[in-house]
Length: 235
Image 1 (tube, rainbow, N blue to C red):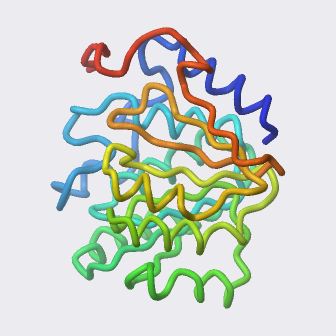
Image 2 (image 1 turned 90 degrees about the horizontal axis):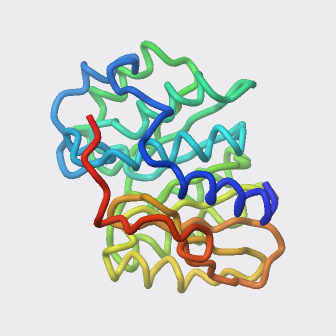
């Protein structure tokens, strides 16, 4: 994806009044995952825009490889697997990671339904870089949503950077956490353009590998529609 293409995509998302690309009741395996261990992309319906943002981006990007850190109970993994099956017009390989063995039950539930899913157990700060190198993985869409600390965000971003295809992106969740935001920004982004994601509850930032100069484009530059705090609850 090019800079202007992502700008247009985010403008379209920013103008949207209500989510229109998903219904969690249609997701295979979703109702088998149980309760999340910590907060997740759905939070029992408290967040209506996170899944919409991811769905919108993968629909426009058409990624071949998606990789996330932070499997948790598997809500985001389940969403990516279902939505890429629905919206991406080619085979998609999906990878996820978590440090906790408690995730393995739901990993296996998802693997029973989706044969394009691989899971890596371990601390991403220690195992992600070597896993990507050893398996020669080239990524179109990476999600940083694991260790919500300065060092965790910094390490995940640095590990992902050399493995992102041109026109691909790194999406950093939980931008409201100062350590996450500082860690991500300190990863060094020469050759990238940075975008604030509109609509996304509690903030997220997109790093597009496009040969840019590290310019940071705020979402009010992309779209001046409505403030996130004024969103209505969507059922």
